[in-house]
Length: 107
Figure 1 (cartoon, one colour):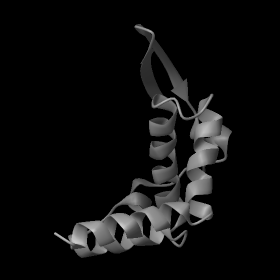
Figure 2: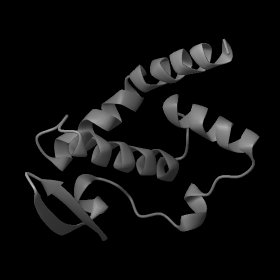
Figure 3: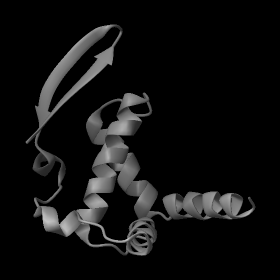
Figure 4: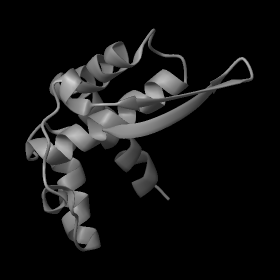
């Protein structure tokens, strides 16, 4: 389980989340470790292309889901995880990554 806290309307709420309740699998820390800058760039591209190992993909979906929820883009955390997962599985996230890469390469 993972503890969390968020502020809404000036009120701090705290809780604990079990990622397995949302379909995420437990994985050893070694499964999500990165490497060199080159390795990490490839891992990132693989995640956004829906080609990374499940543990790496899940950690990105978890973090993106919390960010979406915190930004009010989802009614609840379950919906936020679904939006994040869809972004990767549909290819939308990869298209955004490619756009960011193209823009950054201009400078």
